[in-house]
Image (cartoon, rainbow, N blue to C red):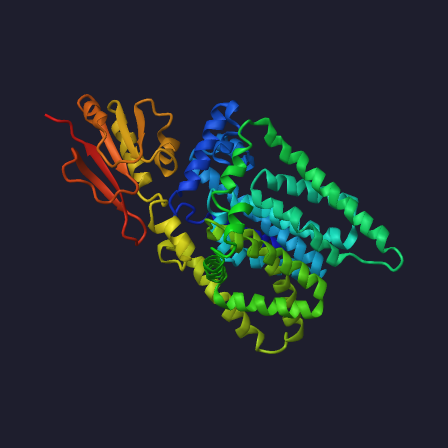
Length: 489
């Protein structure tokens, strides 16, 4: 037990160290602010549905926000422990498949050192929580295909239901159920009976999942989920107009993101593992390949607006063949020195990536899309902490007005997270800020008025404002700009 406990300790260390070295991100600000509002007023427990987001992550945040005063740290701690749970489930699936203690250890280490998981385990987003349900669904589907047990079907339906309360991608868990046919033990003379049992268990999985998903019917805003999904994927009508409109660009981007987060040596290793695994057990190979490939291809064809985090739940099915292949290599070549260089070639880029994420995320080799989102462009919250501290200090001497560029997202939600209960601070949100809001001039005659820009970089020189500070985002060309409004004399 010493080694597993030590690995859990290392996991927590890698997740907690420098937890806020990546500043608050737009989506984090939105989710955390929703949770604050829901905590203050139970009537808003389904608040996330107004933007088409399922509420389970928001609900889990509520008790944590009662305990931890800093909402960003509270949200990221939820993701850390969700990530730990996901890592343990992946390790359990590895143990079940390999029947080996070292399979458990190897599965956990894969999760521990992958930069893809490290990034999202340290952000207050839905992804780490969703990984619990996606890996659980993979595990339970694998077991159900082998055993056709009623209790496993109930568990799979429950996990799918919780997934549907987290992300719409959980519908893939139901769509991928037919892959379990590859694992069924078809006894001679009983094929019709076995197929009937499999079909019945599939119906149980579906019905059980809908029991949980139907909780969303308690809100009148449930329908917005479907509308929001169409912001990211093409409807069937849109798809058939031009089925290939995005597939080339999506495949290029998705493959680049996957290789970027796995690193090239590990990507090649997992590809070799999958080919080797397929030759040893074709049906199980098809099962794991299907769990990765079907969602991957579907996203390539139907994805309208996609981000690297959409690939996160597709990654674990690639790791199980990697675990099995690693144990095979260790058993086959344990006495040969060749095994050490192979693992060093694979692990050094991963550890370097992880080290950069923990110590200097600005210099970490993040894929471009996530670098822009988290580090270098307007969704990144560089300067938020400083602006909040400044406004809080000014508010101790009297009423303060803080005007923000943006009515939803990083602004005003990031500042409302920390200043929402400050009675001396009034936040006014504007979008777009093409012209200077004249009411701010009137207010500036009697109060201190400040203006912060999240996107606008070229500020007209004739606006009645005075620069306080500008904060560079990562090593990119954009800045958060913070001004004081100067009243006409």
